[in-house]
Amino acid sequence: MKILVCIKQVPQKDTPLKLNEYGTWIREDVSYEVNEPDAFALEEALRQKEKHGGEVVAITAGPARSQQVLREALAKGADRAIHLEDNAFVGLDAFNTARAFAAAIKDEQFDLIFTGLQSDDYGYAQTGVILAELLGWPHATIIMQIEKTDAGIRVKRELEAGYFQFVDIPLPAVLTIQSGINKLRYATLIGIKQAKNKPMRKVSFDDVKGAVTGNLQKIERLYIPEKTKNTEYMEGTPSEIAKKLVDKLRNEVHVL
Image (tube, rainbow, N blue to C red; front, side, top):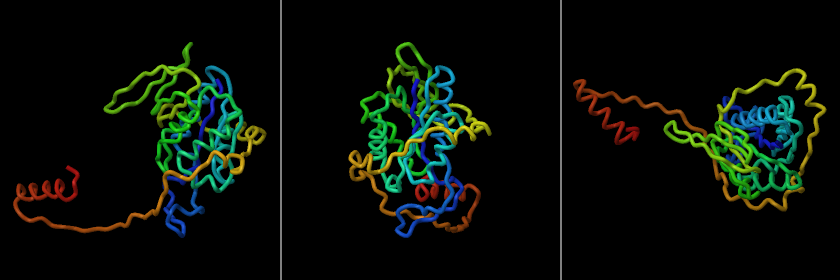
């Protein structure tokens, strides 16, 4: 099977938040890492390749620094990579990111496209679903298991309250992968060396700008949470204090 894996570079989870001068996004001088759900998507693609053969291709969109996530994918076992390289890709919403990906792979013939369930920064959980719609392919979300069948694939979807759903899907298809579907591997020293010689196709913003339109979603302003502390003492008997506490939690804090 020929599988495309969409990978995103996101700010590290424990990095201090630094907003840009306009307050619309974070500054560039923070530390970055691979989006966690995308790492599980890559791992599942590599496992499917090991079972059934084929090719795994990693794709990302972003400035030169985002090439690092592709290098990591190649070091873990991806066969080649596609980098939509330009600062202009940073501000795209899910709709335009999907349109850019679809334009970049228009001459490719993939059996499956994997994305992580959602990104750790924006958290839209839309790119994979929109990409499926643009391509006219069936899709399924929150995938916890994939099995190849004679007619296509059979997937296990995570639902609410501990329930799961099994769905048969024809190929080609798009799947959004849930974190925890597998156990992530580490890149080996040999893999890191081999990654340097694996092909990486560069796609500029000009190459796909015909597919990109105005953003449908826009961040107007971000705010860093302010730490506040207010201590309030309650007096009375234990039963009276309990009643007051429940009343505050229910009517003021709204957690009950």
